[in-house]
Image 1 (cartoon, rainbow, N blue to C red):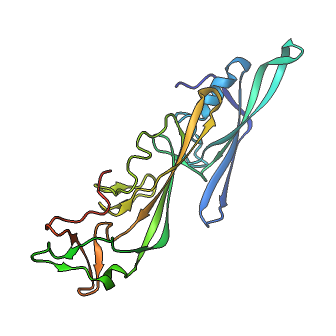
Image 2 (tube, helix red, strand yellow; image 1 turned 90 degrees about the horizontal axis):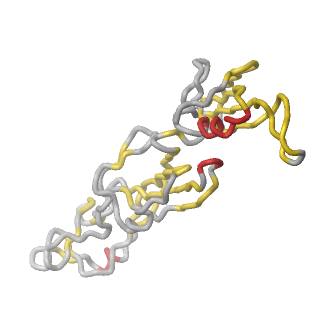
Image 3 (tube, rainbow, N blue to C red; image 1 turned 180 degrees about the horizontal axis):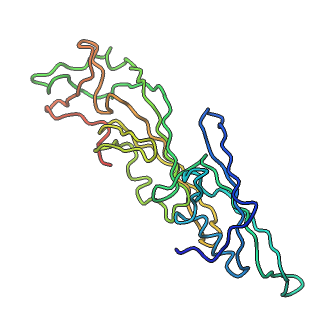
Length: 254
């Protein structure tokens, strides 16, 4: 959407660089803009859109996005005694690089180290092949819990227009292709990211109606979710069913 008519005024701009709680350099800034009373709602909406949310001056960073807009009316007044209107308004617009970034929506992703344990599934499974040419998994192996040094990859999506149609479809599956991160610049190989049900909530988005916030927390196994630790060979290997077909615990579907 095009920017509604407005004018930046003094004492704008006011940038500030700071170190956040994780030791990262961040930028926040305050701008003051003036617009007609009649277009203030449109200007609010524009500042919170991808087109208008970035800090525009070269003394900051475009990664500082609009986080707060405060209205300060001024000028002549009119209207009913219980519902006043003004001729113009000054908006205090606050930006900060700390928080979600625009990637076709408001996204923030983070990877945290985590340890989980793998237990062999309770089936008649074999190493190296089926019942005729494979080695059956022993009871001792089936009881053996293998520690997985992996991660939890969290993706937070804000102000989504619609609920994700696949939110509950992929539970218990892993990624079939390379999974790219949104803002971190690296990726995960196929079958290493396990889909966990997301947390979904709704909120009001001023003039735009209901929006949704979605948080995904995926378990990352760097060795792969469809291979298992074999003590005899000290390696991660595929398991097979009695008929010789590959055992897939978490189907690669997304």
